[in-house]
Length: 272
Image 1 (tube, rainbow, N blue to C red):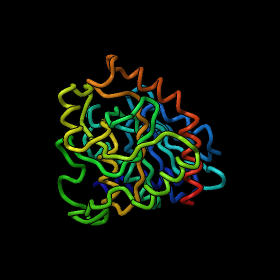
Image 2: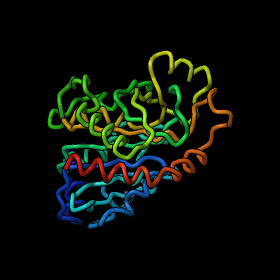
Image 3: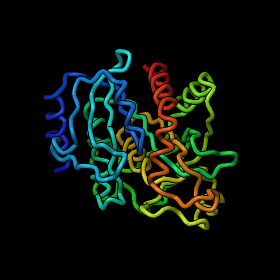
Image 4: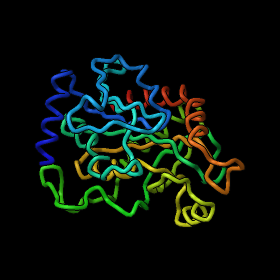
């Protein structure tokens, strides 16, 4: 059933564009403006794609875009689905699986996150080296489809080490503030309590958010190489002096938009 749906979805998207990208990008909260720098071949709203679901969160426009950056073909998801919206995990990772069946080999995940690493400031970036799944669920639960991947995927290198090195070099070349660390994935939609943030720091985390982990797991199951980047759009509860809000997240993402675009363009050129 799932494979039949994916086949129908892939066929529809291929009917809209002949591009064959090897790289897919998922753009997180407030980071969708990157698509303005693409030479667009096809822009398809999620609600026009068979078996896709529309986004419902501000800052997630909900478009699948095929285009080129400096002649390199890519697929970009302008927005993503979240578990806290009430979707099943199958629905959350459906776009990731679609991109894999369209032929991508590399997946770049981006998100806005709350930071609590030492010296972190709102507007910094964090290269994700690993994650801790605190969502209480895994997108691979249920019968395994061997056509997508193995029953028990290895997650030793969930985030490709060579990509981590290239991301670090890219930020160094840009002379841009960055960190490396572990991303903690939680369900949301509430922000964390100060006690929860102290716990996350105790277990080794440096940033927390409500996305990315499901897509990273699904991507590893599919055999994709994964890179992931957090935009630290706010300091986490108990560290920030302000009450947390989604408006703060989108506003701070907007402030570093140009740095984010410059980073992605440079990183893409390195993995082309």
